[in-house]
Image (tube, helix red, strand yellow):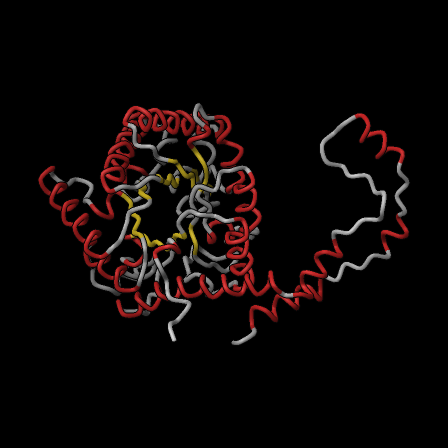
Length: 388
């Protein structure tokens, strides 16, 4: 009997070159895995059943590569993708690794750094377009401060807006058709990053010259490490039509950015996230921005990648069971009931307002209604754990 939890192309599971290619280095210890090439990473992703591969510009091409080296690397990479049935749905740019970005990129005080950051991003857009990417993620990894004495934060916001507006115009000029997805994070590697949550970016986007071109790329770990409810940020982005991409991993609240295997820590939170994405019909990539434990070799990296996809599919099945559970659905229907004649709020009208003002709500009767959330939550746990 075939395993229903095996990934298929229609699931749109993707990984970054930087994720399965992560060598296990951390601030306190050196690499534990030998480097593997982008071509080898694509071959590995084909083996485990992934659909797509994403990349920063310098994950693929060294920052100072000569034109001939650039062409050779890109040619070999495109060939590997084709042979392994892997697509490139998203590209991004590294504006955080090179020491030149020690004070930020688009928001840096030095105009030369800001100019170089925009130039580097334009070239990364060229690369992504050549590979077929239609989403371009911008993560301001060093757009922040250790001390606010270095610049006024409103000036940083203005600089960021100027850069994103410029890149949107370049996108139009080149006809690339990119959707930009802005990625938030509260801290690390800077002490305080300007656009620290998805909500910050959702407030920023309407101030742009081309807001229709720009959305968000929320990441599980980035919101969870600040103690926020990731699902709520995703839901707000979806409701605004701005969920252009999503980064899936897992995270323990209050820790450094762990990028754990999806579903490995906060299983209930991951369940509700998967349920939401499936219920609303999110059709974009399910991108796993995570990496294997530092204890693993590359066979373990394959286990990690398979585990991310399998956990998503398991939770997708559990979401179907939750939606089909008769007791759960009965409770939800009961929670939404109102007494006959209760005026609906809905869209404002003078007639509706008069009816609402004239209606007498029976507070004592309303308070007698049960809110059986303990039972509802336990039923959720039952569904998640059934069959385990």
